[in-house]
Image 1 (cartoon, rainbow, N blue to C red):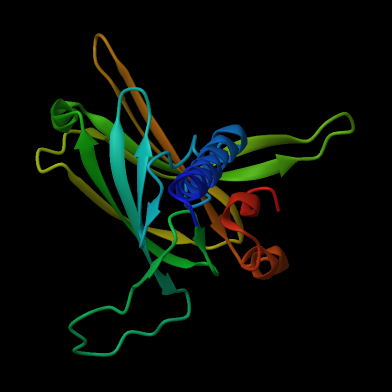
Image 2 (image 1 turned 180 degrees about the vertical axis):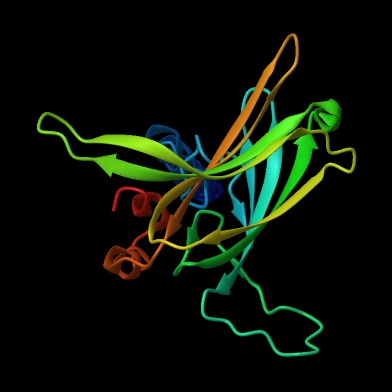
Length: 203
């Protein structure tokens, strides 16, 4: 093979490789997903293990959650409760949910009084359109977190949709982060596991 032919072959390979990368990036942008398939407006930094990074215009947090079945019976003298890590937005059945929130950015958010709320989303039957209302399950008054870490345990007794809110305000800024949580397993979850990551949010 001549030197010119080898050069053309090498250029062709580079063009093909570059096109594949550009196509992957454009699909992610158009579908609004991260490389892990998560909705970019919910988890713009993606999903890493059992921790999510959630970002708004004014606040960035790390969020992780741990689940304990509702029928668990503690053992006398047990040193550790067997909570198991679960995805940020879903737990399989009603039970205890223990969450940890890290205030990542900005640093001065540790000095901002932040309130923590858990609400359940209930559907309202109407003839014209589907509507929803929030039912407050738990509310923690606003306070500062100098360590930058917030931990809280919730008991979720019903299957359905919930939202964890973290919000606060200063004279110049409003801070609000919301984390949707689904309680209960759906048959669609089994099907979704077989789909490519970028398609999972549409099923």
